Image (cartoon, rainbow, N blue to C red):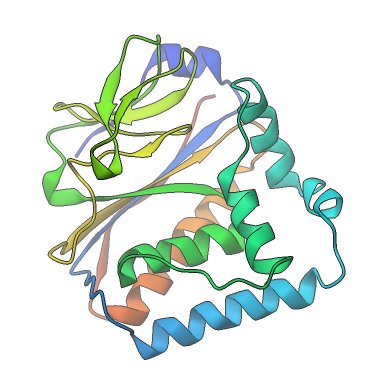
Length: 227
């Protein structure tokens, strides 16, 4: 698997980076898993304790949210991971996902505040390319939604089509299912997010996935910078 960075992406986002983690031997049961559930609850409680009495204004000042807010504001949108953190921290709601593998990714995403898309690696075709949209691109999102890309949005595609974008998330074709045994996680980090933070996030995802599948191995783990 070759990861390529388009010149257009480098020029449009010179301070950005992309993290790629691929794992073999993963498992994705839909039912409750004790070790993962306990980990997720610890993440939730840690965040609630850390931000007890905080307001949305306080959360807005976090480095990661400032970086993503700058990106999303260009498109008139709000960073959904921040909304999710507010839901868990300020409203006391639990983190939920359809399947243990996605829940593991969500827990790391919430803890580190970095945008991540997960895919079934066996459904990825050929090399992977990081690019920036012209506004003509289209793909089918989760649930069969027809999506039209916005000009300037970062996205990742293989030789068959778009896998995910910052604004609209993962595609339907390569989505993670209960049958997934190899997975790839793609982290989008705009300017303001350090490569070291992305690397820690990839390691966090891998360790959380292993709570469910201790035998899972990392077959690719790297941070790519536009510079």
